[in-house]
Length: 166
Image (cartoon, rainbow, N blue to C red):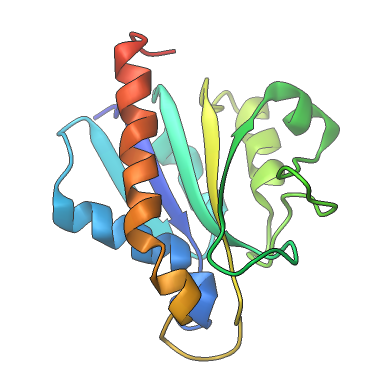
């Protein structure tokens, strides 16, 4: 089945705030989603290649580490120029969108383009993390933004629907 919207929570739930992406996906799952959405969470973004095929919008939720205020949510449209350049930057960030997940999101998107699996629109919802050590609980600052991040994902999908897709 082809899904119109794919929501991917990247991260490991065993590395504290790195589990922010999966926590947001779980919150969305509990709220309920339309039949044409696919939800995925895990530590390896390479797994998304098959899931993205044919979707209109891919929303990736991931913890970030840009020395910002823990719990800050940034929404970043990942455009073709960022993918082509092999980089992507959150506003005010000096760090790229590479990650601790073995293969960074931009690298996965470059591969997706080569194998014709690149979504037409990709948006990163980044949550600034605080503690990436071993453990299963999010830090208070990050845990307090899970609902807000989930709302942002629903808003992005609603905007895509109102615009008639991409």
